[in-house]
Length: 334
Image (cartoon, rainbow, N blue to C red; front, top):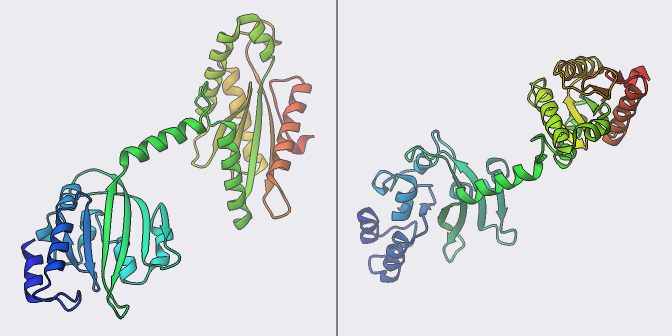
């Protein structure tokens, strides 16, 4: 605050501050004591104000930042522009690539809103911050300062993430649910189109599962599905691969950048894993739980569609069941 008062006493041409401007003195004092963490940059991206709430939030004292362009140190462990810098430097378009969530005032382009995870190195913790930044112009339309306010919304973000996780997970098995699978497949499909990559799908059905439920009861059936899901998950290791519960006793595996030979290898490994569990099932041919697996693959292009690939894998799976179960059949085998 002392440095701010010194600027006021001397006058600051960048802000149009005069020695006798009592109203501006009051405004600065008010900003200093606002409960919302706030800082102000001048037209050279140097810190003019770093209020008490900002000190509490970041752990960075104003004395270390006033008159410098090192405000990034409060939020990151290496140099990076903050939202206010983007306005000062007329780099507003970069907000799209630098922040998780963002909005702008399209009519004036004076205001920006963004959300982002920040490292907060002086606090020793990671916070999710909601950030507003707005410009101050003089009567001639010249930028003289930018005000940035930040709010800690980490708890809200964590709650949102937890709800999203619940919404994307199957309540019984803990695998991704059908909705999550559909979204992931659409995403991977768009990515594969850009690079002409392949995608393989495996459709998996538990053999004679209705009879299992009739014999052992639905609670045992649920336990059986959980055991199967856990065992199959142990086979899937690559980042980007996804296993989901498709519905009932059916599961699906998405294997990006995988040709039909790779799908066969993974599918057979999954089949053997379930066979080796030796879950008793007296009303099946093997006297144990087994699965039937169908697989299909495609080099993704503008003329292909994910529904066609899914249908091909499903048809292969039903062929596996008609052929005697406890086996894998691929699209090429039909």
